[in-house]
Amino acid sequence: MNQNIIYYKESIKHFIDLSTKDATASIAKEHGIIGLTRLNICMQKLGLEISNNFFVALPDFTYTRNALRWNAGFPYGCIINIDQTIPFIPIDFRPNCCGIIFAEIPTQDFNIGEIKKKYFELMNSYDDISRNDFNKRNHFFGLYYNEKRDIYYFLIHGSFSFVKKSLYSEKNDSLMSKICSVDILGSPFYFLKNDEASLYYNKYLDFEKKSMYYRELILKELFPNAQILFHRTHEGFMDIGTILLGAYADKLPFMCPIMLSPEEDLPITNINKPVEISPTKILYCAPHGGGYALSSVISSEKYNGSANEYIVTYTNNSKMLTTNIIDMPFYYRANSAYKWCNEYKKGVIVDKLKPVFNLKI
Image (cartoon, rainbow, N blue to C red):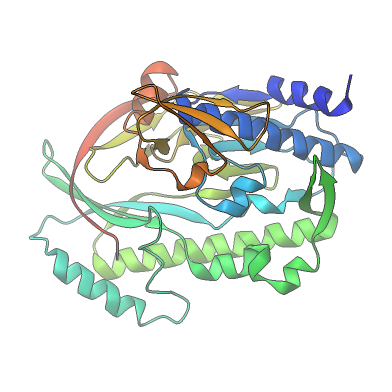
């Protein structure tokens, strides 16, 4: 049997599917299995242990609209466990320290124009921050209301361009010069190992700390009396061997909001049942949001076994053959919190907050 087929079949066994299992998740699964296969082949060529490499798909599992990440074999809404015998980082998963800060704020008369004005004043006060950092993709500010308790909450979701300039290889010539590559299944697989991987990870930790500092700074400037309830990264590392792509993970139970679309109530979830990430690692996990789903698509399949060509079928049974999933019309799923808590029994939805307004500026 072809050795690559053996790796592929082993990757299927190491794929833990806790997704919505809709047509979009099926496309991401096929893509993710190929990505895990490429990762394992690369590590095996380097003499590294791969038996505990696992891929966990959560209910926000989907494609990523970041073309470089997607083309490298990394979907979104997942946790990737990489067994560490030596420090090893697949660089194209592209960590950017994206996360959310969620807080209770004093009840008052809220004026969206005044908040916008304060935001722009703040953005112009710090050289590190770009005023465009919170209007890209699905990054935003959100105000929410708990009718039962008469309490308002504010959420900031986003990352900062200063992180990408240092941690994205194509934006950093010094980093690019240190990256190694191996040709795997017809395309280069880029990685860092040993000391270079450790240095990159430590740099990531510095940027994660800085990103959290600025999210808190913005929140406190807007609402000085805000009480922070949750502040975590969902796009980066939990540790050097645990990659988070649209996921939260912890060794202990935690409570978090799961972001859906702007018009949906915001579910607050108590994550109280762990996931076996690998035979040696058990973590409490949650999807960070709903994830993209292709509009009006009811099924999907690979075309002639190609990893990059798909046939999707629409609700009227028409079909499309495409190699460009990331530019197709999409919507945000609204059922990821329900799936995680009610179907997979990993938590409990303890409250739902009504959206008041969002800023994407």
